[in-house]
Length: 257
Length: 370
Image (cartoon, rainbow over all chains, first blue to last red; front, side, top):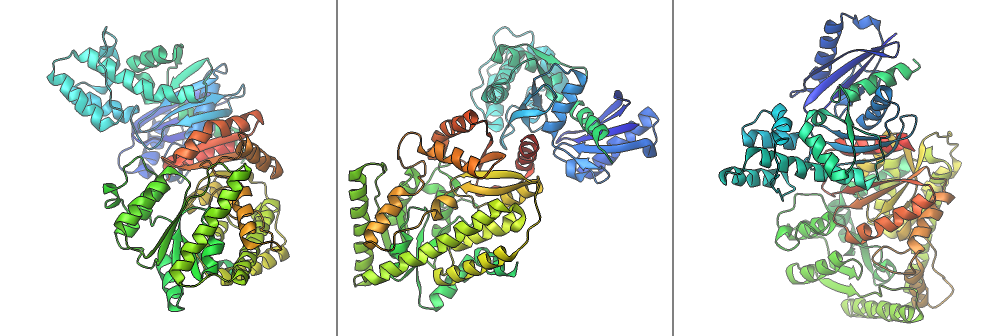
């Protein structure tokens, strides 16, 4: 039997399919303005990609901030629960997750069964999230995907003191005008974001092994900044961005219809 | 339940409610904190009305109260400065949190709502001298009210007021008791309307309406509920959305430790003793808020007992953002729950909060988790 998970995030929509407890395929597209269409689109794209027919899907679970917009899903679960299930599915040893997406960042503690034991989540403010990094990449005239690599060559990260994204951006612009090295500014941005996100992990006393999920996990510089901040090793799987959708598909497979 | 409709009507149109009270020659005294001695206000012939922010955008209040003050004090000041509280004939400020104390000064200097009084209650309540002081403070407030009305409050009027508020509190406590026993007996949004309505409606009418509700509820044969049992803890909770979101996420509020809830109505006053003594005992012995002190462990023990008595699956701390007394007490309160293995969720909310996405994600996950 085949099961689907659909994760509508603030920036990207993700879909995953599992068959016989194995991952069959995943797909990521930009969410755009309409979360309803994004859900339909990402699902159709994944079906086309894997050449699986709609009628062969037994159950669908939707997650992410747009979970209730996926009207063809059988159930909606929060992304915190789905990230827990997804991480446990891919690596049952995981006990802690740091998930940083487009507008949310979360620290999630898991028990041995992949159930959420405790969690902390950012509050309204998007400082330290993917959107924060997007704004900074734009100010620095750098591709978002290159932030991580560039920052790794920094030996003296700049100090960003503002927490607010808007204030931090003007601080970065002053640094550019002051001709500080780009890699140092970016490394400073990662440290600033890591301070915000790291605070969530500290709040719930996150235990290892810890994995990072969400789109921002693809940024190696951000992972390193978090590792330094928390003094721990952080694992990153092959599909960090798709982890929530995978968890949703696993939950779909557990549904008794 | 049609008996609850008047409560929804009242809280959805506070200005209309106030106009009705004025039409019957009533005069309204506002308050913002459950330490306001409503019994004295009522005995002096005024209508006590708890104020909530109308949740409008803050602009005028910005000149007096900075962003680090909670949205309740900023919101109520905004309403006054913007002319939305024209129905007030006075205001009373009990001495509790710093922000309300500062609002009192700002209010006195910048608004014009007639009667004004500070009730400088003791912060430490568990000493004999505090009790004597509390009685003096209540006596002083009585004198302030008497000066305003031009005659003294008859002892029988104060006694009658105490009896009326006892009746109201008894019925509210009974509704809560039934809600805890049969969580599905009343919808979350209806419970919210009853409690909020009870702080603003005509008290005689209220006592009768509450009695009717209790009678109706006692006749009901509620279906068993598998919802998770939640206790709310915090200051004011003027967010009907929270109740609805908890319900939608599969939870039900079975008890609370709120200023707009149990802390405000629990306990009965002794009707057989000197009324001022009865009032003193009430305000000295009631469940305290974090701006008061009555021993190092009382609040934590009280919350754990509440959770155990009501077989709670979890506690949700719903604080107003920038409410420092609650924020200071939070680590200690959470510690008490952790030691008793009771799961909790900490929310900081703005009265003017819009957008429920992150809030519902948290509530759904928490209720799923416990």
